[in-house]
Each structure stands twice: as structure tokens, then as C-alpha cells.
Length: 517
Image 1 (cartoon, one colour):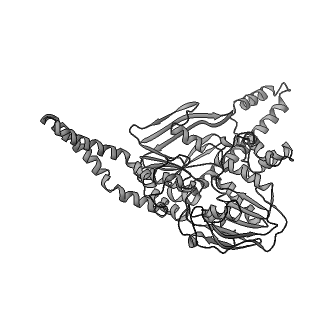
Image 2: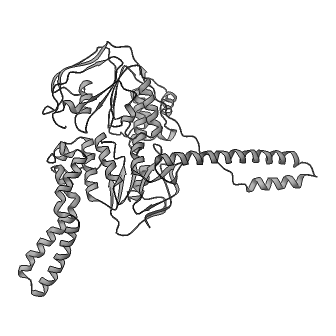
Image 3: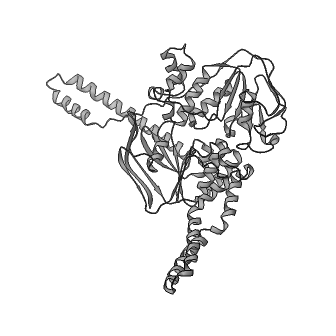
């Protein structure tokens, strides 16, 4: 039985068609992976099925009495609330029921026997709901989920407004999982999770009895948790049974079959056109020529989808610095209080180093401190005088500028054609180039920022979670670019498959952490 039906949905934005006559169904208990290249419309589709966007045409039908939960990483959290308060909000409907039950008990003092009988019946119904919903063990459920996602390490009594972006995302995810909706809708849930917590989430979703729709570019994660793939490409949605590896195999098979059918038909068309051209002028064969022309006119011509623009990344190398690019002496990270024990670190020229550790432990703080963006809490950071850094920040507020202006404002000496060519090399179309940064998808936005970085000569490349939002093809190309860069690299990533085989050293910041940020 379908619990969600999407029929013939068409939607466009700013003159660009995103979905064309797309259909989708979600069956009870299905674990669906929604995949596709950056900018193909995955987030748009999620916004349509959740009611945040209205399609231009078509219909979206939910089964009655269905509860849904949507992970929106950009939701705001109320100031003054602790992590525990937010997680307890997942059970608000149960606490409201308990309050209603207690109110009924109070009313019984002044009620008649008949009214008391009715109230007792209602109290019994509420009590059954509380018992079957596990209301009296919610604290243990909260602790279990918080521990799985690393929130206990942060402290459940922390004010949510003091948290980093990654920590806030974890809180929102934990709250959503505790709500246990009939349908989970998750958009890139692993972006802000470290390796251990990704494993916990993977195990949770594998055992999840209800249905979910998952958008992710993390292929190992997808393979472990989904049993159906919906692929969005060229405004169309196509269903494949199995995991991502099954989808890739079937997709390539379908692509080859279509190409073979196309080539066969093109030969047939060429033969028919040649016959018509050769025989239409001769009276003896004109009738046959007209017959072949009618055959051509009635033919359902196969068209091949245009090849996706493959991004190409590379970083310009500046002059060679000294042997010691960065050196720290008794460096302590922190803001109002110390976050780490003293760190003595030497970054040598042309070394590639990955920094790992739980979310909020201070990885981004370390990068910014090493670059001099924020001062150390204590200790000293020394950088070679010839260091020319390029910094990719984990999250950057999208501006009202177009992608073209975003690059042009920083490199005014470039011509319009040069800027467009640079952006196109990163896999962006003319439509993307002329769109505001704030309306681009997360992956398209990241490609613009990478383009900006690629145009600068650097000898120290600092990348803080550069693969967040990037599709599979873009990640592969970025990995290649980092590997080929002839300079020093400091890399923060939660994807071991991205940095393994590329870096020379892995630093675990947990070994020097006093507490989480």
C-alpha cells in the first residue's frame, strides 16, 4: 500500500524546468535513497512533498493519519532552551496528554458521579496511550539517542544557541529520530556527523521499521541503509530496486541499451532519408519514396540526454615557502575557556594532513587559529613569511550576488568570458552562473566557492569539510585535485574514503581535547 503518491508533478523555477511529469510512490516500510547530481532538484522535490513548495501541476497525496518528520539542517533553535529541553519537545504530544490527564483528576473533585465516570474512562484512554508510547522511559530513550549522536559529550544542559552548526544539526536529527514518525525525510544527514556517529545512524536506519526518504551523496552509507533508489536526472524520476550499487549497474545497462537503440535508429533514419532523396524525383519510384517519407514522419525518434557537465578542479601553486609552513608552541584552542590541552604541531612543506574528531571538538577552530582568523587562547602560532593560504570554510552565508559577480568582485581584472569559463570548468551551467548564490543548491554553491579558491595562487590549502553537498562526480574530481596539488594541505573531513590514500598523516583532535566546543 502506498503511503505517498506523487503523480505527474511538473515544477520550474526562474524559467528553468526542474521536474517534468515526475511520479513517485512510497510504500510502507520502504527505505528510499533519492540520488542525482548537484542541482537536479532533490531538495526541490522534498520541499514539494512536504508542502513547502506547490508544484506547477500534478498532485501529491499522502495517506491519512501519516506522521512525517523532515530534517531541516537550517532550522533555528529557541534561545534559552537546553539540548535536553529540545529533545524532550519530541514527546510534547505525550506531555500535553499527561497535563490533560492531571487536569481531569483535579476536575473530579467537583464533579458528579456521572461526570466522574466519563472522566475516568477518558483518563484510562490517556493512560493507555502513555504506557504504550513509552512515556515513562523517555529520559532513557533521550539518553540512548543523545549518546549515539555524541550529544552527551557536549552536555545536555548546554544552551542550544551556544552550539556550532554541526552540533545544532545533531540536535535536530536526534529530536527527529525520537519523534519516530511514520515517514522520515532526511536531507544529507551525514554532513555534520563524524565517523562513529555515522555508524550509529546507519545501524539505527537499518533497523528502522517505518519508511524513510534519504538524500545523500555518501555512497557507502546509502548502500548500507536503502533498498530502493529514485534517480532524478533531466527533470525525470526513475525507480530502481536495490541499493546504490544495484542502481549504478542497472543505470549503465539502461544507458547502453538506449545508446544501442539510438544508433540503430539513426542508421535506419539515414537509410530512409537517402532512399527518399534518391528516388523522390523519379516517377517510377516516387510512390515508394513517399511511403518511406511517411514512415520517417511517423517515427518516434529516440533522443539521448545531454552529457552532464563534468567538473574539473585544480589549484594554482604559489612560490615555495620554507620547510616549516606552520609551527605551534603550546597552542591552546578556545574562546572564553580552553578547549584543548597544549598542542605542539609542525606542518612541513608539501605535507598533506587530515584532521579528524567528533563534531564540535574544535576542528574548524584549529583551522581558523592556524590561519590567524581567530587568536589562540594561549600559546603561539608561527607561519612562514611566504605562506599564501587558500581557505574553504565549512559553511558560508550565501549572498544575493550572482555566481558571476561573486567571482568577478574578487578578481575584477578578469573578463566576463574568463569568469564564465572558470565557473563552467567547475561544472556550472550558464543558468547557474547568472543565478544568485542564495538560490543555488548546496552543491552548486560549493562549486562557486571552489572556483573562487582555484583562481588564487596558494601554497597552503585549508579545506574544512569540502565534500558537504558535493555529488559523487564532483567529490571524485576534488579528491584528484587535492592529490595532485603541489603544496601543503590541511583537510577536515568526515569521509575517510575521501582523504585516505591522499594524505600523509591523520591527526585525531580528540587526543588533545579538554571538552567539546
